[in-house]
Length: 157
Image (cartoon, rainbow, N blue to C red; front, side):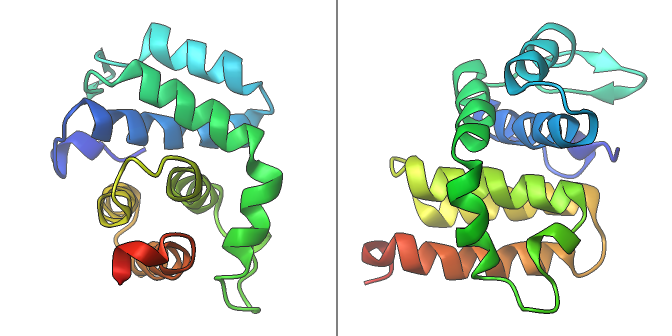
């Protein structure tokens, strides 16, 4: 994995979002439970340096909420995301890390209205840049912008 800290170190909330995306990726890749993945990240990664990669201290409560909430609501979130994708690139065709980013961001846009939509979009586009150098961050931005304008229309009025 790319070292996200080298791109733009953020605060504990940014670190929680990044770690949540990584934990969601791990859940999909390995099939372990969200609770097990969250516990592993809290115990072994958050705020530590592993093999030269620094993991910033994270807002643990937000991290857990993002991981567990995203997984709990995934059946609801996936169709919402899929509606914002083009027919030739359905959700199941995207790389797992892209799905993890979109799912966590969609959870936050739909269920954590205390965070402004523009902040959510910026945070997850930054996460996309930590993993991709091509067009993927633009895809994340476009999908999240369309989603936010739908579920948070009042913020664009």
